[in-house]
Image (cartoon, rainbow over all chains, first blue to last red; front, side, top):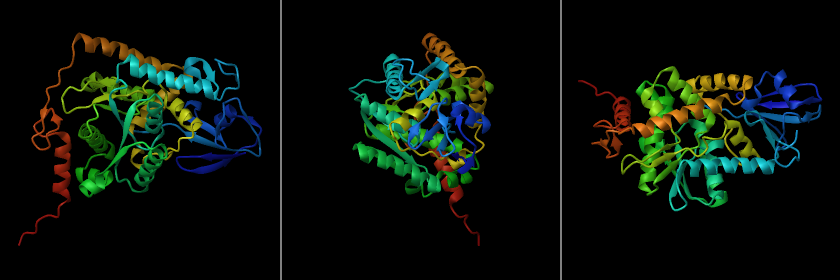
Length: 64
Length: 308
C-alpha cells in the first residue's frame, strides 16, 4: 500500500492487507494525532487496507 | 466497528467516550457539543452578531460552518500574517470557503498595514514569532470586531489547545493566565468584545474528522514558525497520556474549569483597564502592548541616521 504523510510531505510503503491501527502502529504514529483517509473518505481504525490502496495519514495537531 | 447510536458502520472511534460513530451520528454529536457549549456557558444568543476568527485551518473553518448551520449571524475575520506562501495559501482557503457560502468576511493584512510580515516584525523585535503573533492577532481581532460593531469574538480553540495551554500555565504557575483560561471572557470594557471558544468541548481530532466528512477544504500545512513551539511539546505529552489513559485531557481541563469557575464566582477578577494613549484601545498600561510592539518595529526598521 502507498501511504501519504505530512510534515514533511512524503510517501511510505507497507505490505497489505492490514487494519488501519496496525498501519499506524508500524509507522509509530499515535492514533489520536491523525486521521486516515482513503480517496476522500475517512476510514476507521479497524478498516482493512489492501496492497493496492493509497491512504493519506493526515495530522490533526496544530501548534497555534 | 459499529456506531454506538444506530449500529451502522462507524467511521470514527472516540476512546475518551468509549464510543464509535457513523458519519450521521458523529455529525449530531459534534453539533450537540457546540450547542451545549454556546448555551451552557451563555456565550451568545441568536440576536448577537458573532465575529469568527478564521485562519484557514480546520478548527476555525469548522467553527464558522457550524455557527452558520446553527443559524447564528456571523462575519469572518482573517489576519494575513505575511508568512510567505503559507499565508497566501491560508488566506485563499478562507476566501474560497466564504465566497462558496456567500458569507461576509474581512481580511487584515500585516504587510499592507505595517509593510512587514510577522517573521520580519519578530526579527526586528528580537523575540520568537509566536509571541509577537499572539499580541498582534488578539489586538487586531478585537479592534476589527469592535469596528464592525460585533459584540462577540469566537475563536476555534479546541480541547487539545486548552489542555495544552493549561499544562504550560501550570508548569510555570502562571496564575494571571490561569484566571483567564475560561471558555467565555466577558467584555470587561466597552471597547472589548466578549471572547468565546465554542469548540472547547471537542478534541482536535474530532474537529478535523468533522471537517473531512463535510469536505471543508482547510490548510493542512503547519505554520512554518511553529517548529519547536512549546505548545506542540505539551500536546505531544498530553497525547501520550491520552493514549495510555483515554479521557485524560478532558478530565484535566474540565476539572480545572470546575475549580476556576468557582474561584471566579467567589472573587471576580477586576481588570484595571484604561485606554491606550496612543490608539485608544483598552490596556492595563498607559501604552498598550500592541502600540509598544509597533513602535519598536518602526524604530528598529528605520535606517539609522548617518552622522556627518
